[in-house]
Amino acid sequence: MAEFLRSIPLFWAKVISIFLYLLLALWVITRPREFIYRGAPDGKGWRDLRWWAITLIGIQIFLYLIF
Image 1 (cartoon, rainbow, N blue to C red):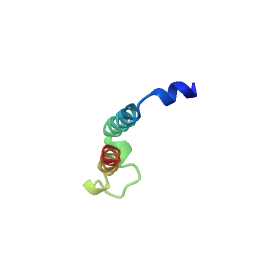
Image 2 (spheres, rainbow, N blue to C red):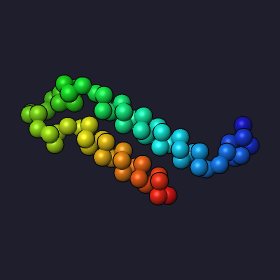
Image 3 (cartoon, one colour):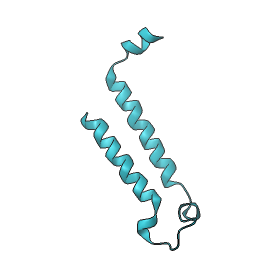
Image 4 (tube, rainbow, N blue to C red):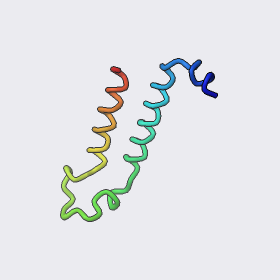
């Protein structure tokens, strides 16, 4: 198994990682509003954790593309 993994180009590891991050971003976007704002004192936009998560996932994807 180790030889098989060594024979795969690193490009595919990057593609798979980015795909998994995009899948995670899709999951984050589909969370209902009630779930996101549970326990928040108000429904202000900056408290929407979906946007924070998408921003961080975007930064991670950018880093994977660069390095």
